[in-house]
Image (tube, rainbow, N blue to C red):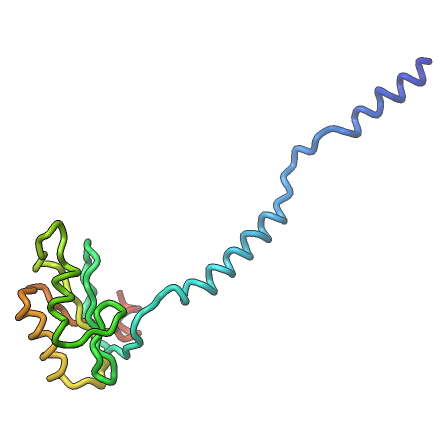
Length: 151
């Protein structure tokens, strides 16, 4: 009888809970998530396809999100991502810059233009914006690869 009870008590040691964490499935899941984010991140950026000219000027630090006016290679004007008639540009800018019933004329407006667009067309759009009462209008340009690496 003592031998029979010894067999039952001896079996208790086999069923101890495992105190180790199996890291392999966790690493597999993390690698899959990394690949998913790497593939989807470039697709999240949307906008008008504009070939910006390059410049070595340093970028500005901004707190508020600026409004973006874009001119594509065909001369079409876009406010953010929607095409706008040049006659309605200022009205739509004022509608977007209005907060609490007051138009914020100090709201930053960035003008992006394809490098194949003439200087006169870009200045005409900037003049239209400043005639609408906006004071902070800036041109955007792409930095060359050498200047970006130096900073």
